[in-house]
Amino acid sequence: FDFRRILEAINWQMEMIAITTITLGLCAALYSSFLITPLYKASATMYVNNNKNTVSENLSNNDITASLQLVPTVMRIFDSRTTLGEVAKKIDLGYTADDIGNMISFFFHQLKNAQIFLTLTVVNLNPEHAYIIANAIADTAPIKATEIMDGSSVKVIDYAEKPDHPFSPKVLKNTFMGLVLGFLISVCVAVLIELTDNSIREENDIKKLYPDVPIIGTVPEIKVTLDEKTN
Image 1 (cartoon, rainbow, N blue to C red):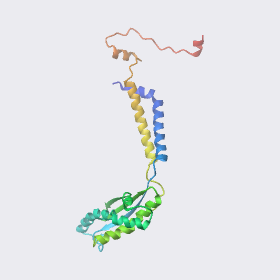
Image 2: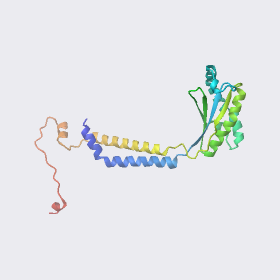
Image 3: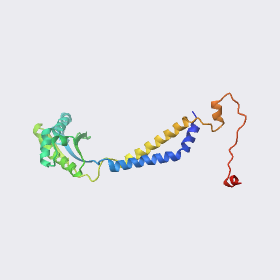
Image 4: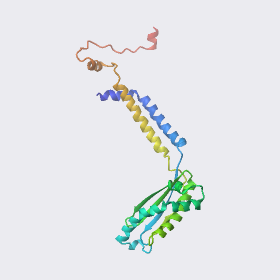
């Protein structure tokens, strides 16, 4: 395996590599910009506490453990058909409870001071609908959760804001991936061409094919100018 020949092949195919790389990068950019439907997301953040009468500074280990155990229950209440059905009626945008359920996702995290926060995210084709639905759930679901889980509380910390730009597709990222993919594909093609090329271009090629045959001599490359050809 001759790495020098491989590098020479890549250098020889540099024009093809550049064209392929730029073409795939441009295709990825155009596809992301015009063919992929943009998606918008809006998020609301809530504070989950096992004891609605206990402030965060006075939380015990039992309160913290109980709050952590409550998070799956809270998410299930938020995602229930009853809660989302009320949200659908409240916003009156033509969505069903199942439609809204397919738009939402949850993420929770615990801070160093043991406070537990739940982030609700709504993804929608319409930026206005995304933040309307997120805020409607933030207004409705905590009340439902408090009613069902007696002694616990879910409070809204931050309401969702209307997104001003889509989070998907990521045009720059996709363009970069297209450029990388185009470069890798073209380099692999150049290497494959070199590996399957059985033409003889130098003495070493003859020695590899006919190791027992001595080389008597070589014909040098003669460059002839246009004037010399005319004469």
